[in-house]
Image (cartoon, rainbow, N blue to C red; front, side):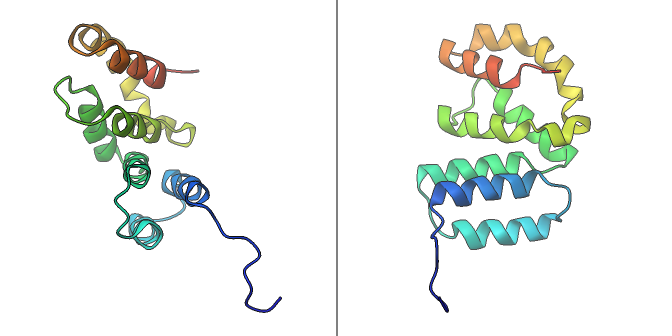
Length: 134
């Protein structure tokens, strides 16, 4: 076999690995950012940008969670539906319950405002993605 590659990872595989890596507390932020740039590089496609947003939102850091919460709950946000969904997907992680627990009450506090000030599609996505789970 030698140097022959048995299997080439597709972008979706690389994105899934990155997302799992970013949620982990076993690696430091520098390692994560190095892997992100090595893997995604200069690719600016929508799928790559959504992966990047999800990874950054999943960093296990309370300041990151606060910033992402503000971004996804801002009714005036200009983020696309896909980018917003990517951030919401990265925000919640069962490996980071201690970091997302403070947002469970905030979810209910802001729910009415989200319903009134965003489109149905945006609200529905927010509701189903951010609903606190046991």
